[in-house]
Amino acid sequence: MAEKSLLTRSIESGLNKRGFRFVIGSDEAGRGCIAGPVVVASCTFLSSATILSIHGVDDSKNLSEGERNRIYYEIVSNPEISWTVAQGSNLDIEETNILKATMEGFRESIETLVEQNDLPFNETYSIVDGKTTPKLGIPVPCRPYVKGDSKVYTVALASIIAKVTRDHIMSDAHEEFPEYGFSKHKGYPTRDHIQAIHANGPCPLHRMSFKPLKGRR
Image (cartoon, rainbow, N blue to C red; front, side, top):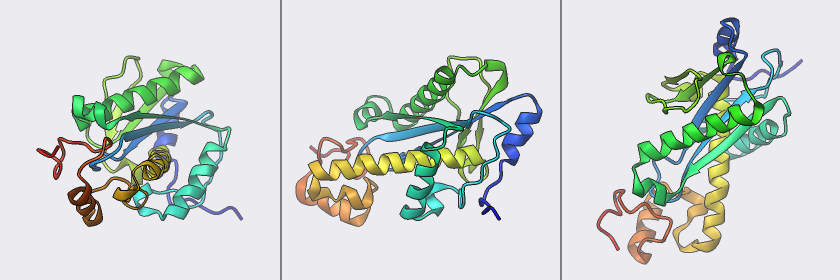
């Protein structure tokens, strides 16, 4: 007997019935951090007829690190799922702001996914987690979905891809800047992270316009 996911593809199925064969889900990771990039992922099933049940799919924040990693590798190794990742560096965030950097990541990841799979615009629909949608340069419908990462299957998959990808980036950053403990807190403003900034000052990965870094040198 196949194990069931915590989520179903009911939202995607409803859109499939309306003629949208390809439903793209998108989510970000790292928006609330004070160091490192914001990472955006998008994914879609390459066939609406695909029957897939990955055990335990949920919003990445509700999963343990081990569960996220297991699901991540099931996603990226499955030829029936296509996915893309985009990121805005801390410098991109400083140059614009976190919202604009995130929206640019959504735009890039969605458009790249459509282009690399040659998805027909009139049969493709995109759903972005949150309250805001990016301005796409292609005629594909895009709607926001509050708490989409816990309600829409493809958005939940994207949330896991984004989170695991970003965790790997911050673990690599730990090798270069071990004094900040990036492998533990991944750039979030934890007490240990703030204490490390007080002790060592900021590093090139910190977002200098974010509290508690604003005004520091």
